[in-house]
Image 1 (cartoon, rainbow, N blue to C red):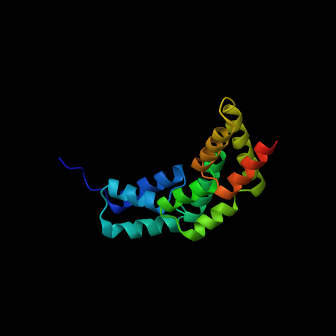
Image 2 (cartoon, rainbow, N blue to C red):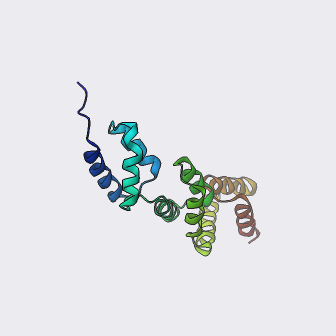
Image 3 (tube, rainbow, N blue to C red):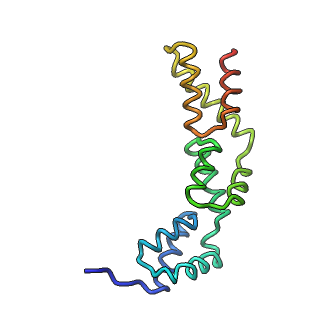
Length: 157
């Protein structure tokens, strides 16, 4: 038993709800169209309609995504950029999103995460402690040069 084919209008309605609930990337909407079983020939038309009605906006998605991952998950720029690339977001939108992350907040978060991680490893040897702190910050997606500077400043004290 196969499921009934949705009309273009029904699909558009479903996708309006999908996009209104939360910012979406173009690739997420395309995946949703496949899930709904919409004919490939109708994809571009539906996506164009969503963009026209301002349900779908790649730049807005990128800014919301970057801001959310930075504030909630405490990710660094490297990891955020990588994730946006995975979602096939344009370089232009990625640059716009990166500009929205405040430099002072970014450095403050990096220092806070470094201090917390370093403090949590107080039973480790100095070099092991330093290395594990650096690895943790790399995994969080911060830039290597910023990590080195921050960890070195932290271990000087």
